[in-house]
Length: 209
Image (cartoon, rainbow, N blue to C red; front, top):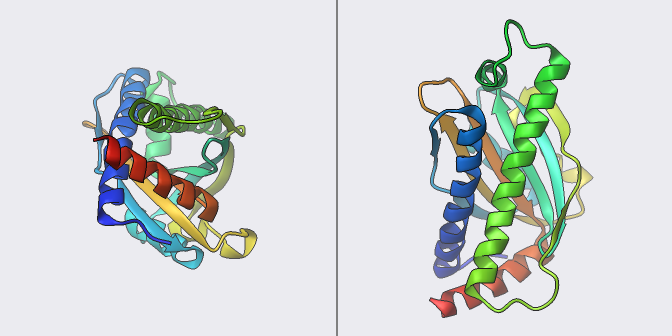
């Protein structure tokens, strides 16, 4: 279970464009310029995923996370991870006066996460379809976003004992807002059979260049 250097470069190219589309939607929603990190891509044993997320997010911070599964042409789990200050800033950015109630804050997190996940995964599939000949249905289905955890250490988000996977493809990018103390991390996890499918897609993508 690994990606070659060429496959990783191709995945990064695809993800850059898709994440850019997601960032543009977030900027439009929040009325603020959005900065994106370079996507980070790793294939890991499942026990390594929690520590990898901790290293990406920061080991000394508590986070809140929204989970959304996807299935169809690609299959896996998307996590949108927020720092505590980022949660509070969303209300201000979206015009809420005063203190944002917990229920309102949760609704904001779910809405923003749904936009990011849909735009990013939709962008990935569009890039694939534009580059290679795809057989069969390329539609994606999404579960409703749900609040996965509130104010927990980042490495506590993934419990390997609750998943049947052995390995995961981890794709992560973070979004920050200019002049604001806001950061969110979009992480996508794909299990073994999706990794194999993605490797085949990436090989075809490379050949099309």
